[in-house]
Length: 338
Image (tube, helix red, strand yellow):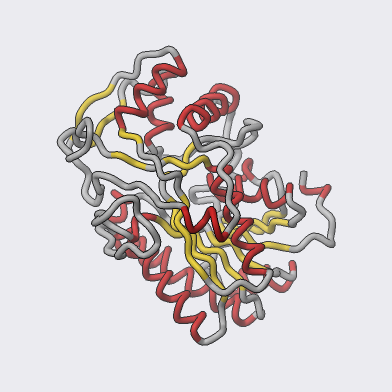
């Protein structure tokens, strides 16, 4: 599809654009008249996901390479997804996360400043909040992350605020809850290696790729003892980025938003709904709790709905699981080009 892009479209640099959320964002950017420039090192992303923009193979830690990209493509704004995002891994290898998520983002910001690109939409996380002291979690909730991944994202939030205070960067910080589902057209979807997200793991059991799925802890103070999370469809998430980008381009001051539905589902809820949709038994087993897992995370999205004019079109649980199931059945067994 890249050949249909026209030179008069605004050029948006999308770091991590070959990944799960980044690729969905590129599709929505293209549909809305933008020209995505994907920067990815393909460590966790897939080249086959790059269907709606030009590809610039690079690591955001390589200043000279990223600088060439800015100059070649005349970048107008940045949407920054590139990061490591495995909570468990972050707890056993924190150096990897601080070097990649923090140091390389600082490099990216320096390149933006030196190329007079001020606007960035930053992919943050509800993990910056830690264990909730009130629910639903709104943007004024204390930020006390309990895992290294969340701390790296919070560091970048602070850095962005400092850069904004000196008028070098304008930002929109988007704190995701649980991204899930797949492109409604079935062209792209979730495919991590290793896979750690619940819905893909449950669907792997449904289609016989995996014998069982683990429930990490059944003794939390929740309705059925398993963790509860707020699941948001990845296409709704992508569109929130574009709304945030356009708000910033139109002169809105820097801001931050939660992206979630305000509804929580337990691990057991996901298993039961998947069994209903697929008609297959999901074998599961109880495993010990994972370090860094809060028992309950549910968003307040009132600010995003009001200020971003954000509408969720796909984020009910049935649509999320059906879209993911459709993607897996159509595409998951095809060879992956890297």
